[in-house]
Length: 212
Image (cartoon, rainbow, N blue to C red):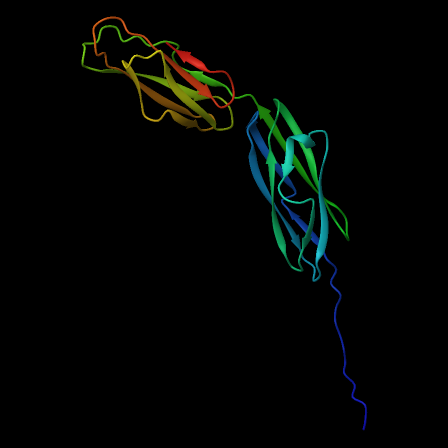
């Protein structure tokens, strides 16, 4: 019989890497804190694409990315990469995340941020209730302020207290960036005579503050 002819056609589509965004800026982050941002790797081609991720630059040790250095994106596929900034000292930090595909030019993502010393400020160094009648209570307030651009966790503890003072509200608190929180301290004497204690406010980073 007569041969059959079947036409075959197709179009080769090269793998193409897209990285978005092209830069990440953390702004101010407290020393010893960690803040995460995300970027997306996308393969716009019709075949799988292998790639290698690496960090370059003088501040490379201040940044890191989650997951493996070697990755493969399926055809038309994408993947989210989490990048962390964890400054170990104050000052501006920068690095470059280099994404090198098996075919095509490397893509570079600029990374920058500034390490900032966390500063906890307390409005009062002492509180004095004067005379308070036994079996009644009296409140005083003080303000905790976080002067940094990162959130700050603090712990409140009463030392040398004989059950005459108490903290109203949570003992574990988080101060937002540039934020403040009001602390109410209650004096409720159970017997006559002078009473004293120390309120210790301990930040996650930095030195404790004491209020007598």
